[in-house]
Structures are given as structure tokens and as C-alpha cells.
Image (cartoon, rainbow, N blue to C red; front, side):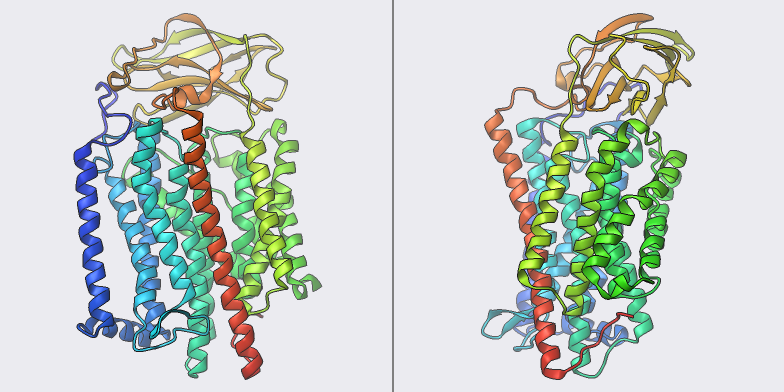
Length: 605
């Protein structure tokens, strides 16, 4: 259980208790042994119930068992994992760190979702037997064992995400708790789950071609709905990286917000419209809004945790649909590039209107020049990758040189944009003077603040934000301060400064990203004393991370830190390479199949 606002902080730092680690390891080992036993028994014909389940589902859904079983697993696992993930972020943002993986109820949902995702991929791999070739792009494993290449990729995504869970505990032991969505091992968890949806779309395509060879394909209308929903799921998966902005506690510069929106929008929206047909981009955006709305309602209104919002994407979807009425539709790569450009310009204007209405903080003029310089190239790259994905599904990939250039260029452009966004500075010899007015009670202290920043030239006329944030004391409270002079601000509402709340003044102006602590509770595991919120005081600006991630260790070897991040980066690039190889293999095999049979089913219209 998480501590109440009045209870002292006792949750450990630097990794979970050894008993929890051993318990989880034993449980994971037992589940794995059971799954291996079922797989061996199925492939050696010692059991037939797994085959019968696949056959029955296949008859009902019009696809082979090696495709239908993984689809059912992924569909259920991603819904559960999404709920668990958003619940977990809400718990950490509103109540702080937990006592370990078994002490957080959201972790059970995440673990189920990731295990089910891995099982989905492995079920596609082990289901075909007796020499059956599951689709034209099947990969030969042994003399009589073939597996769909997309099934292998889905299993790899599940394994990549699952590895992130134990690595997260190792990470905490090495570097302390990183209470942020963007912790490297956290990115492994959500990245593997998010990209698995691309594998499901590819698996459906492999199954579609296989069924067409037998003259038994799904009705076009049903396939259109299913694939549009799959692209909506891909949009959800690529959007979870924005979680900290959704909750209003972003620990990074605001220029990342438009960047992540266009990166997530380009691939699924462009690919959906090019591959599925009219209305698919809008259908994907609507499915995204429906699912995220349901999860938000459950986490906030049912479970009573911190409130969060999410991007709109409808404007970008409409732009892609309108672009498809032009002749660019006949030139997919140009369509993707121009579509990405529209998403990164007009689409962001529409998102700004939505953002400034529902999100905690507006996109100010201060961030727009740099934000667009980062977002537009990434949007074009994302659109090109979306077009490339659609062409791969159609079996019409461009030359290897062109495809590789797009993929490598997209990774480099995105990497450079992220590196630029991470480049933040902390002012030297800068401080803030506070005068606090009590408006709460002794049991639940709340204050309003008058703030004077020194030097007076530190903040320009239009900063990204000057705000007070309070979190982890039972919720999230943010207050965008009202400017009253050249270097003076005042509160617009009370903020808590007692219990377990961590309350700080946050400043972002251009590349400046810094904070001043207002109140920090005593933390026995950290051996940290309370930093009180007195009636008046002056404190220096420090890096935000020193306050927001108070649990992190500051004495870690740079070499160990670099190696650890390098391992995560290597794994992430391997997953990107994996989906590229899988799409390329399916596309080339479909192309060869069409050359022989002079036709192949397609959803394009």
C-alpha cells in the first residue's frame, strides 16, 4: 500500500526487497516451464486441445489458428497492459514510489499484459506443425518446423518488454529510483508493447495471403474494420511515451510534446489510409480516443487516482484523409512525406487548440520556433515510415537502398531531435524569494505564494512556464503562476506543503529548465530531513531532476551509466531492425507470390 499524506515515507529505495525478487523469479520460471511443456506436447502430438482451439477460432474469424490465437492474446494483453500502465503512472505521480513490484497492484496488470504478449508471439511460432508453412514469408526453424516471421517479431517484442521488468530492479539498485516515465528500462517496457501492434498488423497480412491461396479470405468489410482497429492500437502504443505530459508533470522541456505527437501520428495514420482505404485514418484516431477515454475514466473516476488527458489526433487524421483525394495518393512515398509535413504544421496548430484547452499547460510562443524545427523533420520521417509500412503490406516496397535510407534517416533525425530536446541548462547564481500565505489548516497545510526571481533578467516576457507543482502526496496539483512584474509572480490557487507532498517552483524558458524546492518531506530510507515551507525564504535554482527524482543516486560511475544506457539503446535499435526485416521479408515474398499468381488480395482503395 502507498502511504497516506500524513504517514511517514518508508518505501525502500534502490530496488525491491530480495524476497519479492525471488518470488517473482520463481513465479516467472514456473509459468515459463508450463508454457514450454505445452509447446512441446503440442508439437509432438501429445495434446490436441491447443490445435482444436486454433482451428475453431480460425473457422470463426476466417484466419488460420497461427494468426487468430496471437491476435486474441495481443488484443487482451494490450488492453490490460494499457490500463495497468496508466494506473501505474498515476500511482507514482500521485503517491510516490512503492515498496516493490508486488506492492503495486498496477504491476500485476502490466506483468500479465507483457507475459500474454510474449505468449501471443510464441503461440504463432509453435502452432504450425507437421511441416505446415504458415504463410508465404514463413521462416524455417528446423527441417519440419516453420514459423510466421511476424510471430517471431511479436515474441521478440514481448521478450524485450519482459526483460525490462527485472532490468528495472537492477537499474534501481545501480542508480536509485528514477520516478519518471522516461527511465531507460521503462522505455523498454512500453516500447516492446507498443511496437507489437505493428507485428499483429503484419501477422494479419501474412494470414490474409495464406487464406487467399486457399480461396477462403475474410470479407473485405470485416478485414477493413479489424485492420483499422489494429492501426488505432498502434497509435495508442506509440502515444504512451507522452504520459508525463498527459499527467501534467513533464520532467523534460515542452518542445518534446509536439515532437512526440507527430512521431506517433505519422506512421499509423499514413499507413492506415494508404493500406486500408478511405476513412481508415479517422477510424484509427477514433479508436484511440475511445480506448484512452475509457482508461482515463477507469483510472481517474473509478479508482480515484490522478487525472490525465491525451492528444486528439483527429485533426491530423482528417488532413491525411483530405490529402488522399489528391494525385499524391498514387505516389505513396510523396504522400507520406507531404502527409507528415501537414501533421507537423497544420496538425500541430489543431493540437495546440486542444492542448491549450485540456492540458495543464499551454504551448507558449517561447517553444514554437524550436519545437517546429524539431517536430517537422520528425513528422516527415514518420510519414515516410508510414508509407513504407503500407507499401510493405502491399508487397510493393521500393528498392532496398530507398527503404534503408528512409529507416536510417528517420532514426537519425529522431535521435538528433531527442538529443536537442534533452539539452537543457540550469542558471548559475540564480535564486527565488518566496513569501507564503497560509490558507489551509495545520493538519492539511496549503499556501499561496508570491515569488521574486533573481536576477530579474533570468526570465523573458514569454516563458514556457513558471509554475508550482506539488505531487506524490495524494495527487497532482499544478499552478501556472500569474506574472505581476518584470521578475515577480503570484499563485492563482492554493498548493499543499505538508504530509508527503513534494512541492517546488519550476521554471522553463528556452533551454533553461530548473527548479527551487518549496517543501520536501522527511524520507527515512533516503536519510533526508524535511525541507520546511517557511513564511518567507530564499533558495537557489537547481536541476529539476534533483527534486523530481530525489531518490536517484548522485555518485554513480559515468562509465557504468554509459554502458547501461548503451545496452538499452542497442536493444531498442534491435527491435527497430526486427520490424524492418519482418516487413521487408513479407513484402518481398508477397511480391514473388504475385509474380507467380499474377494477383494478390489487397485492402487498398
